[in-house]
Image (cartoon, rainbow, N blue to C red; front, side):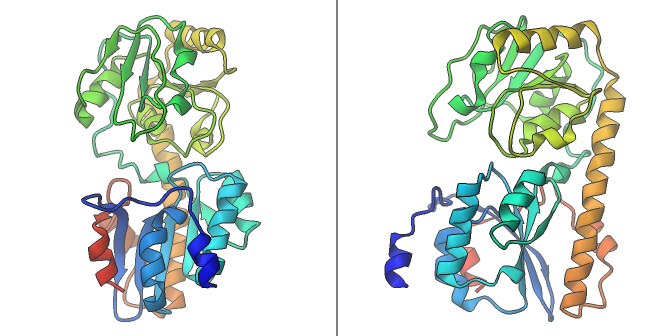
Length: 324
């Protein structure tokens, strides 16, 4: 087993140093503890060290923050097998049906509760009824997977770029605006509201927060066909899913410029769908409390009182290790 363990190399692990891992103590009581973590293999380092001290009454909700194809899920399964982790202590919040199929085929259990439901609609992103300056905006790292080049024929394009995290860099198309330094969330919200639509052009990605941030600002989305979960928020009114060509993207943008959508309607659609996912989470939370005999906590009340933007906390790995 030690040989197998030493040869196991996850495709990515959360870095150390000053980096705070996506980790949250969601509930701590005398009968159980509930944690929220993001992804599986990413947590290899601290779980490898701490799993022998997991309590039978510890329970983990697992957010899926990236695209998990079947090979990635099989690697997650291999990690569980190597460490002899109890799958019943982990509940995966799938972003879409494909996640559900892939994870359940490897013995994991969970429910489709898309991570974008954890964007707090009262946090920053909102409809501001500003004058439109840009035909489209693309908020996203300049990573090659974002396929910025597909916006090459879009007129009056705004680009808001963040940290690329060392990934291969994408060439950027002609544009009217590109931020010279990181923008605050409030500034990003303003730029989105100055645009007729938001672009998401990657082929494979997670649920993608920017996609739902557009919708919470009341701005429709132009997306290419995708895997990873962002598509579950799209409908015929709030989005156009077009072919992965420069001409198709430009044509879709022009359609939304010619026929703008009602911003409040788009925003409300997203909030109502998010509430459906949140109710599903509350139902699961009630089952967890019941499983461990927690009878003095009302799941719905607890959820509302402990809801935070993105539902993720951030802890240094040394703090996490002290919990186990």
